[in-house]
Image 1 (cartoon, one colour):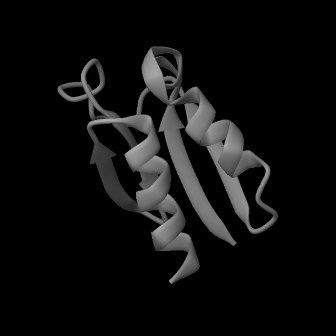
Image 2 (cartoon, rainbow, N blue to C red; image 1 turned 90 degrees about the vertical axis):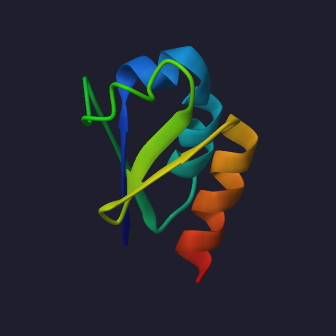
Length: 73
């Protein structure tokens, strides 16, 4: 089971579709918190924690690709 953590503000800003997609994958648990400590990037980049690894990207689409690569490897 892969653990995905994201912050609510980033979901509202740009990445909600990423995490909504991940919530539909059977072996992925998505946890949304008020903050995951990446505040300096939150307004400008899509980001999250995947199995404890911090990831970020310039677009939600690229973030989703990055996450899918991590969970499929």
